[in-house]
Image 1 (cartoon, rainbow, N blue to C red):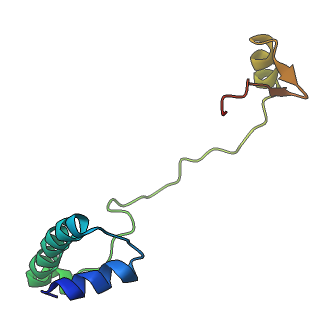
Image 2 (image 1 turned 180 degrees about the horizontal axis):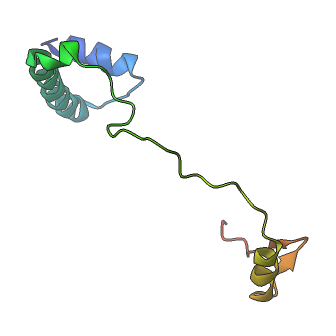
Length: 95
């Protein structure tokens, strides 16, 4: 992909509407990423490496069971007078 028409087609396929100046910048930026793919392709270990889901071995799960704590809701409601049906009400901030 080396000419302007190819990059215009690429931008269009990505649903990008670019001005001429933006297309010039996109061309430079995307050329950089194309060069990076060449670098990655040149690394021999990438062809045989297994994908990593999590890079460290995990032997046990430290997750705890969820517990409903009714006291938390009471404490929160004590800190404000703006409550309605166990919820805290906030003023509308969007105009």
